[in-house]
Amino acid sequence: MSGEKRKHINIDNMSDEELLSVRMCDLGLGIKDTWLENCVAQLYKELDEKGITIHPPCYVADEWLCPDGEPVIGIAFFLTHPRLRKLEQTMMLEIEGGDKKSCMQLLRHEAGHAINYAYRLHGRKKWREIFGEFSAEYGDRYKYRPYSKSFVRHLEDWYAQYHPDEDFAETFAVWLDPESDWEKKYKGWKALAKLKYVDKLMKEISDKKPKVAKGEKFWQASKLKTTLKTHYKRKKKLYEESYPDFHDMHLMKIFTDKEEDGKGEKAFKLIKHHRKDMLDEVALWTGEKKFIINRLLKDVIDRCRHLGLKTGKDKTGDILKVTTYVTTQIMNYIYTGKYRGKK
Image (tube, rainbow, N blue to C red):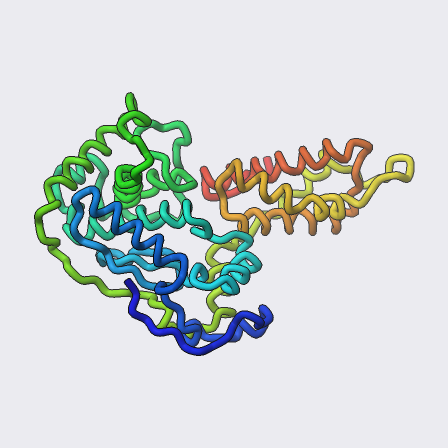
C-alpha cells in the first residue's frame, strides 16, 4: 500500500484553470483513506485465495501501469480525488477505472504483469510456446480478430491480442477473477489451454519466493514536478492524429450544399447538437478512446461548416449516416493504423 503523505492543499473548489497549474507532486495524493484502498485490499484477498503469497505494492502514478520488469502496480492519480476525476472527464471525456468493476479489472491485469515480472515467468520455454516471445516489439497500433477464440476477453479493444505480455496479463486477470467461471465460459476455446497453463503455473510457484522481490515505482505522482496542464497536453498529443482531408467527398454524399425548399439546417449544427450521443455510440461499438472519436467528430463538424453543407428532410437519417461514417473510419483506423483514403 502506498505510504505517501497528503499535503494540505484544497483542490475541491479550484477552477479547471487553477487546478491545471498545480504540479502533480504538490497534490499530496495517496491510496490510503480513498475508495481505492478497498479495491487494493480486494485484489490482495483474491491473490491470497488463489495461493499467491506476494502482494504487488500499489502506488499513485501518472497513469495506470506496471513498469516493465518491475513487480509493482501504478494506479492513475485522477482516481484518488473526486475533483481530479471531474478534471479527467473534462480533459479526456472518460475516466479509466472510474468505477469499482473497471478498477478491479485493471488491478487484476496489472497484477498479472507484476506476477510475471516477480517470478520472471516469461523466461520459461513453455510460457513462450503458449504466449509468444516476450521480447516482441510493441506497435503503436495492433490488428486484432474480434471473434478469435485463441484469446480471453477482459479489457476493451481485445487487448490480449496486442502483445504476448498483455496476453498473459489478460489471461491471468480472467483466471484471478472469482466471478469469471473461466472453465465454463471458455470451454471449447483455444484460450482455455492458456487459462489451464496459468492455473498450473500459479500452483507451482505458490510456495516459492519471487526472483524479484522489490520493484522501482516509476512515474510516481509524488515525485513528478509536471503541472497537470503539461500532463494533459502530453496525454492528448499521444492520442491525437493528423486526420486526412478526405472527409469532404463522403460528407457531400450525406448532406447537400443547397437548401431544399429553404428548410435545410446547417449540417454542422445538427452534428454538434447530437455530438455526445454519437460519441457514446461510436465508443460503445468500437472500443476506441473517446478523445480520438471526439477529434474525428470535430474534423467532420469543421468540414461541414467550411463547405456550408445543409441537412435534408430526414435529419434522423442524416445523423445515422454520419454516425455510421465515423464508426467506419474509426474501425479502419483500429485495423490498419490509418483512415481509408480517396480512391
